Length: 204
Image (cartoon, rainbow, N blue to C red; front, top):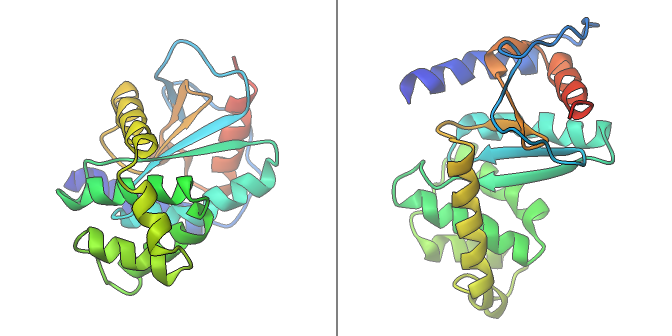
C-alpha cells in the first residue's frame, strides 16, 4: 500500500497544481484508462471508491465537485471502502451510509474529511461518529434509527459487493460508466482528468 499511496501523492499534486491547458483528446485504452467490465452503463455515471481515512480522497474532492458542475447531467456515485483503517474502516463506511439515508451526506462528508485531515481528530468509535452527526443537526433518535437498520446493512453489502466486483484495492479509484477505470498516474492534469471522463462518457 505504501507504493500506491506514494503514487497518489505525486499524481494528486500534479492534478491540483498543474495549470489548465488545452490538450488533444488522444485517450488510449491501457494508458489513461483500462476496461474493467464488459458492459457499460447507459447513462453518464461516474463512481468514486473512497475512504474518509484516505488523505488523497480528501484532496481529490474539489475535482469531483468541479466535475459535477462541469457535467450537470452526471450521476456521481460514491462508494466507501472498508479495507482502510482496520476496525475504523467499516465504522466510517457505515457512517457514510447513514448520512446518505438521512440525506445529509453532502453536508457531513466535508465535515468528516475536515475533522480527520485538517483538525487531525480521528474518530475512535461509533460514539465519536454519532457525536459528529448530532453536532451537525441530526437528532440522536434519527441516528439511532438508521445506523443498524436493515436498509443500511443492505447498503453496506452493496458497497462491499461493488468494491469486490471492480477489484478495488486503492483509493481514490474512479470508474466511468461501470466499465472504464482511470489510471490517474497517466492523466497528469486537472483539465485532462475532466476531458478523459467526458471522452469515456461518450463510449459504449
